[in-house]
Amino acid sequence: MAGRTIGIIDDDSALRDSLALVLRFRNFDVLEFASGEELLATPSLERLDCMILDLRMTGVNGLEVLETCISRGVTAPIIVVTAFGNVASATHALKSGAFDFLEKPVHEEQMLRVVNEALSRADHAAALRNERLMLAERLASLTGRERQVLDAVLEGRHNREIAAELKLSVRTIEIYKGRVMEKMNVSRLAELIRLFARLEPVN
Image (cartoon, rainbow, N blue to C red; front, side, top):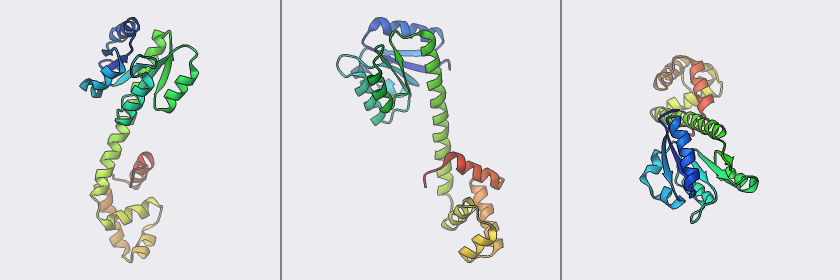
């Protein structure tokens, strides 16, 4: 995960610096922010791969920062830092979209483990988003009739059933099915079904 950019948002400069030191030692790039306002105003927000956000800060508090990031569509996972035993705040943050929480005092190894988990989960989510986008583009290339045939295939219908329903010949259905598979960039029916089962694209 080295080379990824982590944002640390905390008005406690000593804590901010100690966390940054640990992360930089593990070859992460780190950007430090002394307040929620500073983070939300920076163009660098879009560059962050992950954030470590203190919940209790003067000015805009951590929960407000979290909710603003979520509403702006920021996809970087956000790990919140809360005072020891403050379960209510942590629970609220998780329900609002935080990836996980760390209790103060923050333990270095635990922080690194959670950061790596957050980055792995974010990478997986980004890959799925890209695949869904690609699938949507392929679906958009289908004609109306091809989409009808695709939907019927995904419902498990045989060529003869599809032909009877659409009042076409079995041979014509086979041609349409071949076009669908070519446009969806698959070579076997099993690949086509697996593609939709995994991605569950929005129609």
